[in-house]
Length: 345
Picture (cartoon, rainbow, N blue to C red):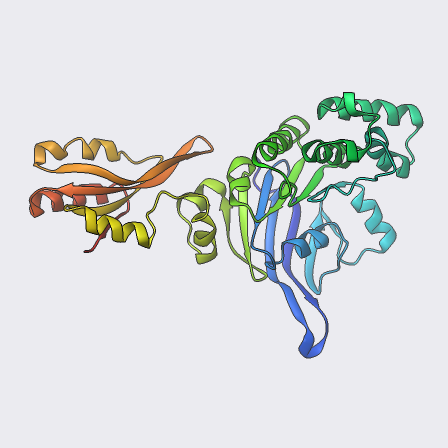
């Protein structure tokens, strides 16, 4: 993945978007700064009302900024005419939650439609449609209509249609929210394949943190119209700084005990309890391997390790039993290589 600051495909500079006027004005986005590199998969996550859909509509020019700039492939689109914006949109593919397929057209006709609008010759259109249907695994469904397909198949048609004119940028707005977990994984695998084989930059808009960890290179957390945190997915998952990020992570990464579990551990465990953060580059096992010789017994009371982008992170909650001085010494050594939080009684 290239450096986003070196040659970004998409840049948002101090972007603010307000709806309404005067005292009834509502600020959906507030001073958003983002740079998205060519060829990366960038996720934007947030709860409903965070401003995600507004951000998408600014990137594809369906809404105008109140202030700031949106730059696509070096071109400031914030003050372009509608005709010029239409040209920009031809380079942006869109995938929606509800598929938005044309019911009157077959699968082939849906994928062909943007090529008709673009004025492509018939022979060229047919070759391109068959190529894309083969890519998404739907050649056998070419002459069926959308209502004859499963949700996952309809989304594959939507993806093929979005790729029809070879856009360098693909916007996936809650593209898996209406799908079951198995179908979601299939769609995410397809998006990864598109990114890998075609070099298409993909912006994924989602409220599902699990989608982020499966597909994205980097992520930005949007909360009440502001970017509260952004960076590499591993860094954000393994060491979230902002409270909204921590809140999201609690829904998918359950390696730390919640308050109810902590209360139960305090009641049931006689030893001292410590939560130890596990990272890809620390050697917790080496320190714990010396516990027995120090007169300390340890038991895993809670926790789990996640693997993300081939790197480990998570936490383990240990029960440590032994003389206080021996336990203190073990914890001191652990703190030299990892974050350690001792749970008070």
